[in-house]
Length: 186
Image 1 (cartoon, rainbow, N blue to C red):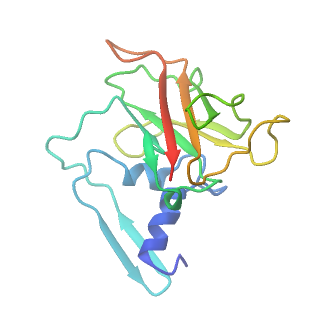
Image 2: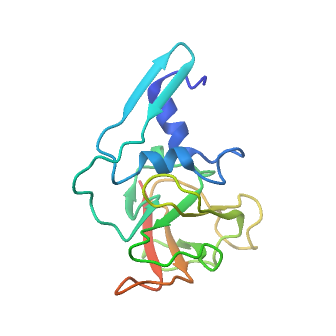
Image 3: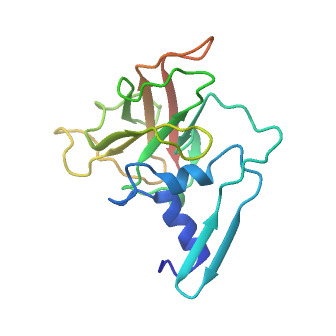
């Protein structure tokens, strides 16, 4: 309610990191559901709505995991300093134990080499009741004001790169025991 436009509402749902939503990121996870074929948006006055509960895609893209922000180049206009990071694991590839998983975010220099320790987190949690087709999520967010002395601040800005590292995994078959990806904002 009160986003003002559908575009702004989608941005708010993808952020989903306010105190009442950061524990599950349900809006974001429904919108990223790889089994979804169709969704609907609506607006009436100050109210906006999304219907994102479709699971009709006949051949969904097989993913071992899904994360936001995703690996690669991400527009800085589509992710904010206070947005939570999350990963959801495909239960076909992992025996998911959200309590043993670790999730760290490291700053990278221009050569994509770690330039400091893992960021201190102001949110580190998990959610296993289900949103989207992967009914699990590990959710973290770097703190803005509690980083070690000399640590570069966490800022979403042009040419800023970060490495996400998720460990403590129980893979099935050939799935990796540790998942890493690099995000570069532009």
